[in-house]
Image (cartoon, rainbow, N blue to C red):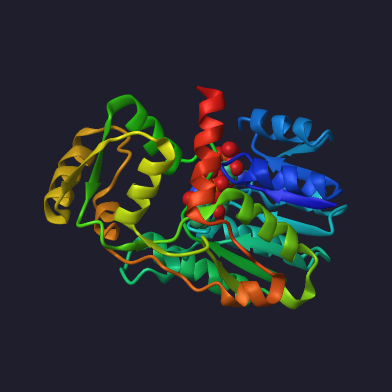
Length: 296
Ligand SMILES: NC(=O)c1ccc[n+]([C@@H]2O[C@H](COP(=O)([O-])OP(=O)(O)OC[C@H]3O[C@@H](n4cnc5c(N)ncnc54)[C@H](OP(=O)(O)O)[C@@H]3O)[C@@H](O)[C@H]2O)c1
């Protein structure tokens, strides 16, 4: 039995579908008020049933009773919540369970200091010292479902408005990963002993300049759109003002600062240990555009 923690988020449903498709029995730990509908849909589309256990990571008790019947755990709660991870690790220590796959992020590799980066690095180091048979997967920016806040949102914006706003020159490198490749990686490492006690970067097939990415989106959408480029410094100023006015800002000044940094990653270790072979951005974005046309 595999237990998913943090499955009601963006990544959870495709991971659940992939596990069920590979005949794993799956349980999910979900908070009482979490939306389970996407998980139910994922299970239905795999033709399987799943069990929910209501609980929260804040309470070790809710995990202990569930873990009794579990062989491995996939932990998808954001590692920036170091206190939640600590509760989890302290609880698991008192059970016999050893195998946990953790989802971190390439944020830990960005050459720019931030609170989130520090929290994730601290969490990774707790995991490495936990005595568990862990595997840490670090995906780059994930895209490829209508719930993604990156490319799906971008495509909807372009379709509606006919233009797009970017910050900086657009010459920086990016390497987004298609969501199915993340789900496949999780299933590939789950019982692969070669990956125990190791950490892997996983990313899209090739890195590309932000401007090249825009050209690919333009070609695949078959739609002309204008790109309004705002210099980084002006962007930081504008977003600082906006984030003070807005109650729930969708962009923060640090995100703008990060937009000029190259985000290209080697996944050679993942290729060697579990045959990681990611989708190209051209193919991934084409699938996303097709799916969004079906849903329009
Ligand atoms: N999205 C990306 O582009 C991206 C890129 C790289 C790495 N990652 C990493 O991939 C992982 C999954 O990302 P995601 O985008 O799917 O995250 P997400 O959408 O933010 O989902 C987070 C999940 O954690 C659960 N959670 C939060 N606090 C909890 C608690 N106290 N007890 C139990 N569950 C709790 C949430 O449950 P509720 O539904 O109850 O809130 C939700 O299921 C994260 O580690 C993230 O850092 C994501």
